[in-house]
Image (cartoon, one colour):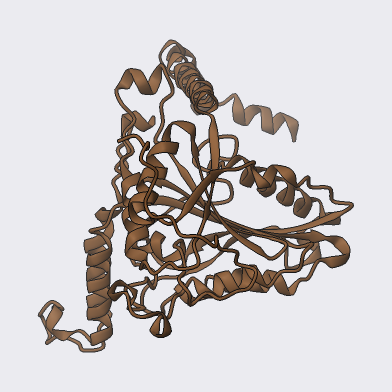
Length: 411
């Protein structure tokens, strides 16, 4: 047997291939080593760049009377879409990257709070954008709530998830425009899709916590400045293909030999195409949404897991798009996770990734998934300030109204 095995690899074709590899060693080995060096260098310089930026967590405290529609929040988020990385020297020597932000809705023992995490250099810019649309909102720099909780498996139980879209990115979710909120109706007539989120967060017991994190980074075509030798097109490259797909799925078949047209589609398909075309006109962001539910072991309520996943159902539409879990810290069958080791590892990693706000870059780059693209309209739908329609008692609001934004904000 060994003799046959040896004779197989000592035959002509294998020796010829080995000789070719050996003779071309001076060509391909330096290329491989240079590629490895570039990747390691970029990882180092980007990590240093991120560390040097520092970070700040801003809490947004809402007044009792707030009647702005999600259009105002869309304007704020649109201002964050300028994501240049500078010159090639900035990219490859300084490690400069596209900025990213974290929009967070949190329940700490039933107390509902809104936060924005950012690098320090963007603080004044973000504050000025929020004040321009919401002059009565108060903004404070606060300690990071996620660092105040330590994960100890003996005392604390955690369940975590990351979401994905159920269809290609160009299909929008059900947005505030579909709910008629762009018309800014009176409070008694509002149907705000963020209300179930607020109600769920406010229903938790004092010892329970839920953290929802929406990580966003300006989306654009990627090229050499993103360490890509091959250009990666932006999300608009798939629009024509998806619209053609919608038209071909029409139950109204064209005459033999003719191509399907817009004249032969249903009203639902027209709505789908119009929604796609409206959505792609808005500034896009690479996005990842995480959710964590945690409580002491003796108070952990599995029904709150269902509540956490269910808070995103109202953003789904049968003919458009929706959210579904892409990664969770649990497994369906015991043989998938011997002695719970994989579950425990997943809990520790998603907890640490949340606290670091890490997904677009190491140490948790593309952790259990790839970013999906949401427009500013979609982001403003899942993260905006509710009006009086959200009447959760534990949703604290500031009692006083401010007349105007601070006068010393930088221009």
